[in-house]
Length: 170
Image (tube, rainbow, N blue to C red; front, side, top):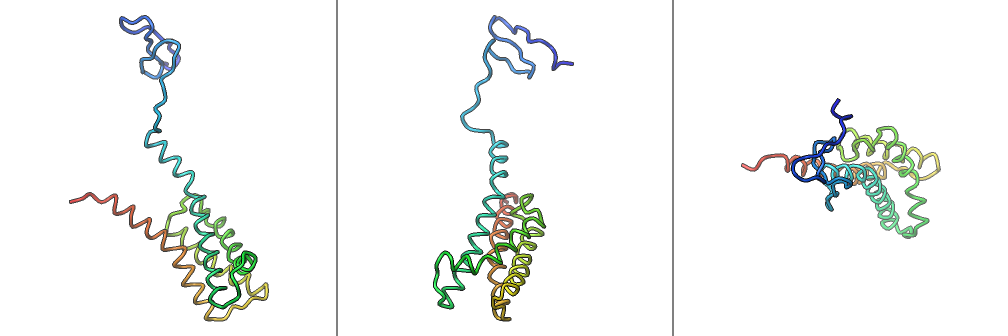
């Protein structure tokens, strides 16, 4: 059981001890942390921040979809108006996030991106119809296409760039 072994003096220097981790340290001091986190730690930090960043980006894009529709149909682009138009799609998006557990792999094109897209479209249109909003066929088609582009294209770009980075340069 080497992890229980006591520290022992090393070499000619009376203050240098051999630690349990196998490194040599000066007695009474710990090794100084490097000012730059190691690559593994940087990757972990990015991975923890990724789900929130994807969620914020998706919500912003859904709000942009609602604002664009209001502007196109001359309803006025106000914060309350955009939220009134977007709430069914935001609620459906939130339910889709929970259904697919999007925080596990937020950048995945499938199943995460596809479930978020179709869940947001179908759920949003359903909630909009239940609330008395218009759901004409043309609106359904535009919703399907625009939210498909907004929710799938960023994930497709990330997938493409990751694959491109992995390929060795010939």
